[in-house]
Image 1: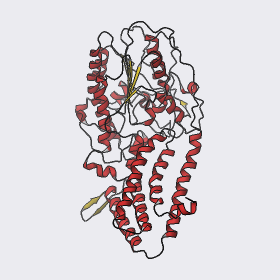
Image 2: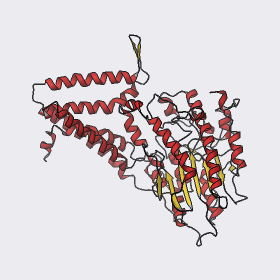
Image 3: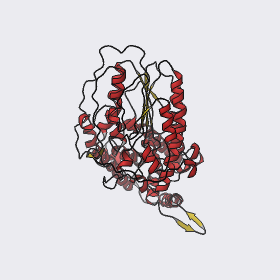
Image 4: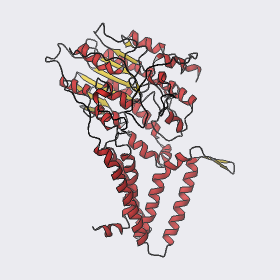
Amino acid sequence: MGFQKLVKSPLLHPFLFAVFPLLFLHFHNAAETPFSEILIPALVTLGGVGCGLLLARLFLKDRFKRGLILSLAVVLFFSYGHVVYLLRDFGLTALSLSLGPNTLVSLVWVLLLIGFGWLIVRAKSELLRLTMVINVTALVLIVTQIISGAGLLLSSSDSSRRTEITVPEQRPDGDLPDIYYIMLDAYAGEEILNKVYRYDNSEFLDFLRARGFRVADSSRSNYCGTLLSLSSTLNLNYLDSLLKLNVRSKNRKPLANLIKHSRVVEFLRKLGYTSIAFSSGLSYTELENVDIRLTGWMSLSEFENIHLSSTPIPQLLKLGKTQYDLHRDRLNYILDKLPEIDEGSAPRFVFAHLIAPHPPFVFGAGGAPVARTRRFNFTDGSSYFLEGGKPEEYRNGYINQVDYLNGRLRLIIDKLLGKNVENPPVIILQADHGPGLGLDWYSLERTEVNERFSILSAIYLPGVSGVPVDHHFTPVNTFRLVFNSYFGTDYDYLPAAHYYSTITEPYDLTPVLKFKRAKHRTPVRLDRIR
């Protein structure tokens, strides 16, 4: 089909306008989102447009008019969530009725569709020229996105400084222990929970110590964001030793590659471990070089959630399961499945990234479901408050999720320790960074660094004594410690270092040299603020 014939097609532009939002979202997140993420949403979207054209054919014979009306519907459909977000603080009261952004935009969009649809149906003039203009416009939008994303894709090759993974020449004697690495996103250390969030966590920490966990009381993360922190932990080193850092680069693909193809999994595979990972919902923390991936029957990735939030579907889903419900189901699936894993042969390495107590807050008091009206996302810190969140809402939502996790983790730990008394597993409970109540993604000076870097860090190392888990133990040494303890390696323990970077320039790492003590507030147990 020649270009001229292509742009005359009355049915081309609806498909192009439907694909454009997916390409836009992907290329603006290409550093963290593999292209495969776009395939299922694209198939569903294009299938929906095709069904729409077939349905419209029953009522309207003119192909040009069908295409124009459907394109209008597609544009309104995929712009809905963006307009609602822009009007998030706007409301209107009319005839004693209070109309929020969702209701207002829905009414206006229906009127626009009906009004312009009527004009198109009633049009007497030739619509070929208008169709050609719209087709060219849609093609330009698509090509622009491809060109803008090409540079990032071309620069996304792995720039890591790979070093050979050395394993002992002889496999260690005896049965190797299963290893559970449970990453609790944004779970704070005791001091921050006590003084900033007014939550007494001593009962849970005492439980861990009673079970033999080594708890680093003042542990702090090495980095202030998940992608930075996890890529460092899973590769046993600081990022400046793993990557050729370009402080002006916004490309997170090298970090994602370090996580997806981590040295921890590679090392353990050479020792005969079966690697198992739960799907977290964040594409950049999905371990691709594992043997088994576990996910619930119905779960959405972060990319799919963001794309869905641009449409009216979340509002319609209120009749069934919302995106918040699906996220809650995913967390519960991981918590339910963790102590029951029977996939693969022992020894096993199990990785579970729980996006909690990190927002979104989906568990209330006692784990009760929480209904949220804002659009679903995983934002934290200053981005959370730009979305309309309030400090007290953050504080209460956060400690409710800490309290719920504590109860579930108690049961999980006891089940794991009771499954194999003769060869108990290594269990790592560790956060990637602290909470974001005082985090400013654009300013170190305005960030409460003591809060953001304070983390829970507790490690169960059966049969091992005299290991260096001091009060200030940091995640970069986690697997150096595990490997030295069980596999005969002799890794040096790296000195503690902590780095802040903004959300826009993740590699412009500023050392955090001084931590201020948290402001004291009288700690209270959760039942006193419910």
